[in-house]
Length: 111
Length: 113
View 1 (cartoon, rainbow over the protein chains, first blue to last red):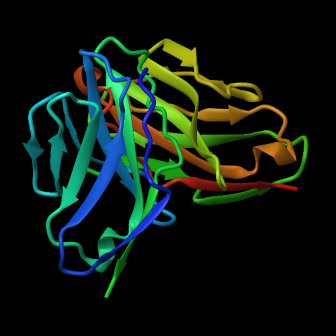
View 2 (view 1 turned 90 degrees about the vertical axis):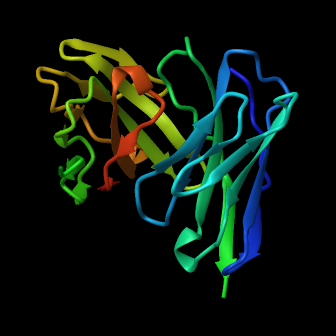
């Protein structure tokens, strides 16, 4: 499975868009990019996933570069409740049913 | 729907004691799993199940047993608790066709003295 690289932490301003980067330069053609977040003391929460097209749902947008070697999760209007650790995970369709969580990106939304 | 529920929320054990962490889901999900989370370590998969009667090991299975007699329940048993098992335990479930879109429970915080 492809390895992902995220910054260990970042700050963003409340009310502004938060752009969370993820590098997955070894991703293969049948692997999807998944994003989860974990608010302090809670269980992880699925946010969104994509293969190669940009995706949007009520929580966020996912932008995947054309070469698929990196992606950006966009929180359109960050709120204090978006402060969390965000995980970028790459999994294949025929993977082994396991989600591998790395250390993620600690995002702090600042008032 | 209650989603994924876990009991107890907190537990303190003495070394050598055994106990069962309960996990239940009411979404008729085929896939269920157990993770542990230690400070600075991220989440690590302990055991998982793709359906009733089927279980498999994750990356850190030693010291834990699981069984899946029903679709709804997936208990995690600690056979003889050790201080190294002090952790936060999360249960998760998903549809078989969307196994990586997992719903997580609120967690059980376990301390082994």
